[in-house]
Length: 115
Image (cartoon, rainbow, N blue to C red):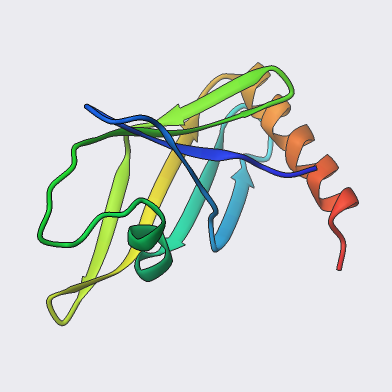
């Protein structure tokens, strides 16, 4: 089982991207959850063929799993010494049904991908 993340640009085709780190947290009552997906900017910008001098408008990042689509427009680039270091996409899930769905997806993913 793999998690397929895609970046959607305003005027170009969607591109598949692989995160360096995925962090999932949920509330005690499972009504809300947060998914933070981190990409190192070196691998991220090379993968999407984006030189830092060229601008492409990113609409959102999304992933589809078990007939569910989760997307976010909450995107962050963390800069250090004038250079981008980390690109993050933060998914805020406020529906209890979607939060439980996402939790089940990651439990299944962890079971199948134990190192």
